[in-house]
Length: 461
Image 1: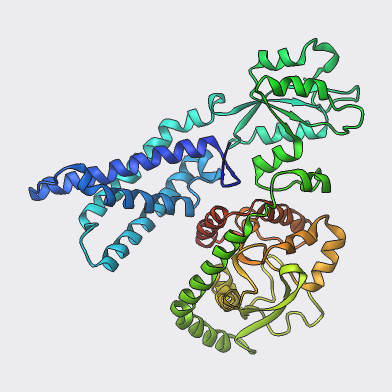
Image 2 (image 1 turned 180 degrees about the vertical axis):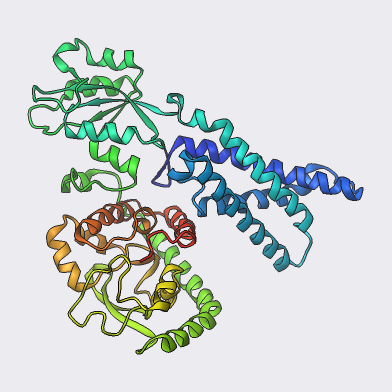
């Protein structure tokens, strides 16, 4: 994987994205050439259209990221990828038409955009057909040797077998005499020179997956392997990189303290984040105020009770604040006390089911963002009634309160909606990854990916 601004991106995604970017520019240029030929116009040198082609490519690629074209499902399913490509290119064309209207010029001709749309879809689908087999081949995956043959090694095996996995395991070495979970593991005693064994397998990375490190940590072997240029990684860091989450089953306080993350250089990025929150929330409040008022009226007409729902949530540093949403449940929804949301929750009103799916009920939270109690991106704030129990049941749960809560977050775009202790545990793993690796780049990625969640109702309940 390649690390961009503290966030890991698979090599396959980088390669596919660069090819897509080049093909989008080609599609844009071909569209100009076709249209110019139809009307008998001389286009002039390519450099005169460079900014139009760059703008076209950048906007279409942005919508592709936003709707999940580079997600795991799209990488392993041609049908899934084609459907999302059609949506992404269509949204990009609409955005370009709006940009052209706003600029008051003729930078992106409608006829040229129509040709570019068809050519882009054709070339992008062709690109996936041509590179699909290669992206899944071992040549595009890191060769990993696992030191360990227990449950952790078995977890790595299952992770490597996923179609979108960026690595393949070339061997296992049982470092202790315990009964191995991985049958094909080679006992350490059968390998005369572990460094030579790594070289013979052509491994580019060694992962330490020991169940118990005490008296079994092969420091001399790891040092020799490291000095030959092979990357050595521990299990928790490897899982974090490959899955985008912090594995609560294996991490400990010392790993969180000494591993990379929670950098002190957040003052500038935090200030930029706040400037963005203020300006974006103000702008969106102006544009969505009529929509909020219309649905507030519809909520009043649909069921008895107030249009807006106010609820106490736990925010930054564990401080309580009031969260405001459009009411989507009956007023007697929690007459017996706080409850987790359920699938097909009977407490949700007819209109509430719709506004939850399209996230309209979240719009009043823009006011909370403007006040500074929330941000656009961050862990979802939980209720105090649940937080006290979750802090007792889940390790490091309090650490998620060290960043400002958000309307959307890393957990929301990576994990389907859940309402239980186990679901909270999984979401906490993603929240800790966000808190540990926060950068404005990760915020941008989450905001873009939120469009995918809204379009396909992922996680809505």
